[in-house]
Every structure is written in C-alpha cells, then in structure tokens.
Amino acid sequence: MVSETKAAKSRAVWARAGMLHCRSGSAAAQARNAVRTQQASQGGADLVLALGKHVRLDDFHGSKSLAERAVTSSKVGLQEQQHVERSSEQQGAKQDEPIAPQRLRLVPRLPLCDKDLDLQSVNILLSSAQSREKCLKVLQYFAKLAAYLLALMSTHLGFAHGADSWGRQAAVIAKGTSQARRLFKLFRWLKHFEDIGAARSEGNLRVRLLFFLSIACNLAADISEDICSMERLGFMAAGTLPVWAELNANRCQLILALVEIVLAIVRWVRSRRESLQNPRPATNRRLWMAGLELSKFIADLGKAFWDCEFSFASEIMFILCGLWAACVSTHKYALKALK
Image (cartoon, rainbow, N blue to C red; front, top):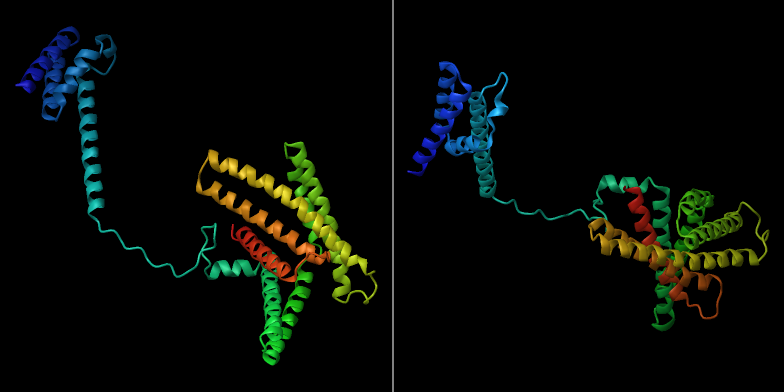
C-alpha cells in the first residue's frame, strides 16, 4: 500500500511537470516511460518523489528534458546498488577464505630495522668499509676479553699451561685487529667537515656551539690518532714521536666523549618529546637509537679513563665498555649501510 501510494504521488508530480513543460504528446510519453523505469528499479518511486519535491521546474530549460534527467538518475541509482551488492559479495568471499598460517622465520632481522640479514644484506655490509672496521672492533674486544679471562684462569684456577697459551694467542689476535683498524681509520677526520652544514642549521645557539665543539674535538682526536698510527704501522721509525703523543691523543678522546654525551642527551630529549607527541614506530625507533648512542658515548668515557692512565680505571671495565661501544657502533653503521 505504501509503495502504491508513493507511485500514485509520483504520477501526479510527473503529470503536473508534463502539463507545464511538455506541450507535445511525445514529451508526455517520455515522462510516462520515465515513471515506469523508476518503478521497475528498487527504490525508484522514492527517487522520483524526491525529485518532484526538490527539483525546481525552472532548471529544466535547454536540450535535456525533465524525463531524460529522470531516466539518467534511475540508471545511476541502479548502478550504485549493483556496485554495493558486488562489494558485499567480495567481502564475504574474502572472509570465507582460510587464513594462511604464519611461516617460521629462519633469517634473523636486524634490530630496530625492517631488513633481514639475508645473503644480499650481508654482502652490502661487507662492501662497507665502516661496517668492516666496526666488526673488527667487536672482534678485537672479544679477543681482549678472552685473553683477560684466560689469564685469570691460569693465575687463580691452576690451568697454567693450556689457559696461558690460549691467552697469549687471544692477545695476538687483539693486537692484530687493532693494527688493521688503524688502516681503516686513516683520514677519517675528513668526514667531520660534512657536519658543518648540520651545525649551522641548528636553531638553538647553545646546541650549535656544542656541535662546533664536537667537530673540533673529533678533528683533533682523529688527526692525533692518525699521527700515532703512522708510527705504529711502521711508516715512521719507532721513537720518532715523543712518549706523551699517544697520551695526548687519548686525552682528546676523553674530551670528545664528554662533549658527545651532552649532545646525545639533547638528541634523546628531543626524540623523547617527538615520540610522546607522535607515537609511531619510526619515532620510537629514533628514540631507541638515541638511547643506544648515549650509552655508547658513556662507554667511550669509561674506556678513555683506562687509556688516559687514571688510577681509578679498571682493565675489565675498559674491555667491557669497549665491547659494548663496538656492538652499538656496528649496529649503527649497519643500519646506515642497509638504508
């Protein structure tokens, strides 16, 4: 009954529209055909009634008549209805599909990164000089730790013969990797000139001064280390440099560690603020990287205490700090190489 009433109302509306605008019998026939088309589609009577109520008669001047517009509207409504039905069918088919079980990951993934350590990634890391140098650093401090523990075993636990020989072998490995790393680090101070642009773009004046102080300390530490490496590697005769040359180079590393700790705290605070305002995986990763970098510079400070021959310094603390700093540096440069 409701649909018949709506259809009757729509016929009355189209009849009035036809009397006003359709002066010929052909225009009236087109209007009647449009009404039948709307009644055949689902919800057509509602659409025609809405058009009769809301569309002004003055808008239908020109080549397109009121009946033609009604036919077009009915086709659009039918197409939209078919599109909704197809979408619902597709969603139902997707829900019926079985969920594939998750496969067991056999390839390790680099922490704080979406890259897998597959063969391609390993080849990329091996082709990077910085990654190779940091891996040698990890090997160097592992060898130092092994030599230290084996020396303790030979002294206190009675394993004199075997532990002592293995300890000497580990010490030789540590020394050899240290010499190899010096070759990788030659002229490393040139890269610090690239940081001048970032220091200039810093908005905070105090942080900008810290950046420039860090660049100056890096230059002094790396150049002094290169000079000492020339004698260590045999490019200069032994005894060419004074005794205090390497000690002063280590003191530059101590000052650099203090400056870098302050800068790392600033970076961590900024990353923390950004992570709280915009908690996304990318900002959380930057926060974790800032925290790891801060811990690395603290470890550098503990290592510099032993290198500068302070009385309170401990050898085991020197080895553990060096090992942790080596692991964090290796991870940092691996992320850079895999970007």
